[in-house]
Length: 443
Image 1 (tube, rainbow, N blue to C red):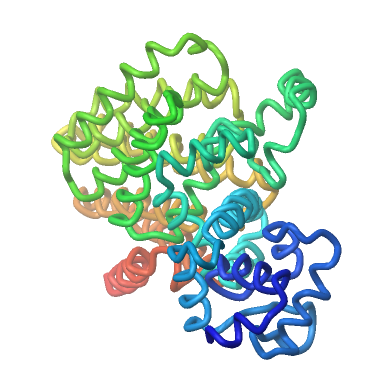
Image 2: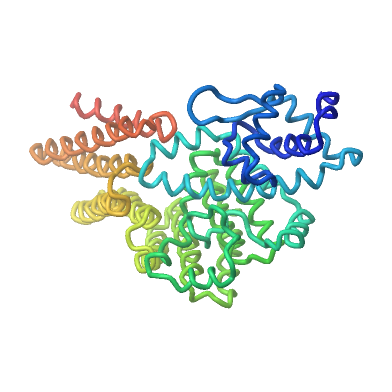
């Protein structure tokens, strides 16, 4: 490999080490963004292909790739000063991160309305998306300082306060940025979306997300990006709660709230939406502790902000759905009070319905990763009502609610199948749907 590399013209040597930053197959478009070779990229890639140093997929738009062993060899050259490629690779990594930051935001945005297409785009490029996250997490302070000095770029990767679509982000002039900030209400509402967080739920395990958000929190602190730091603390706390680490989550939530309260621009929409994320996770925290009043109070605060700024939105729907959970869990403590029990169950039912309908209004269909869960939640509420009337020997109402539960469980499972996400979403939940379905039928 060393002989093959040294036999190349210098210009091809540099191209080869730059494209080694790709962890998997890549398109010519992606190569154009990562290389500094202008319009000649296609010819350069063909030269490397003719020398059997990279391969190209047959048929359709070409996707190039190199053998893992060659990629590892090329990356190892960066530590040898005799080859002088360390800076070349570092600059290529910067351009790679810049391109894939935009790709991640675009795929996350697509996932709202065209789930199957978004998942295919992610699957086709999953190795490079993973590489992007790896490079972001591993970015050191000295690399960031060189980026600021050489590129004039002080970005925080995946800044939640930036627009959803960040392709070529950072290249706009200050005048253009100012124009964007003064844009229409619709443009303002497209900022500070949490779509990437939803995508990361599909890409990473809970423990991987914890490591990712912990790294981003520390990076934000080092860069003095305090709003980003606070928001990363909230995402981190939300994932830590999935491991039932209540004390750790409490520490991050307290620090996030204190940080948000000290921001000079805390009345702006983006900071208020970060505060909404804090209130949402705070609500989840109290939910897991079984403290109903505090749970609802925090979720209502989040909903008030989201409803004003985002109106119908995926994250607003999640808050509404969580209120449904809060009412459902509280209802189970009221079974000795039939009137109170049914009233609170109906409140929960209405919230789950509202969440499902909100997603439909937001994206124009129910083809979103959250919708099967919302349908299942509606079914579960009807199921509890059915069991209640069964215990009270009110058989007509019992049968009616069991039938509604079956209807919504069937809708949830059918939607999963139509979206082709049975394996990637929540298979255990929908297995539960089938079990409940069978249990009701056997009654």
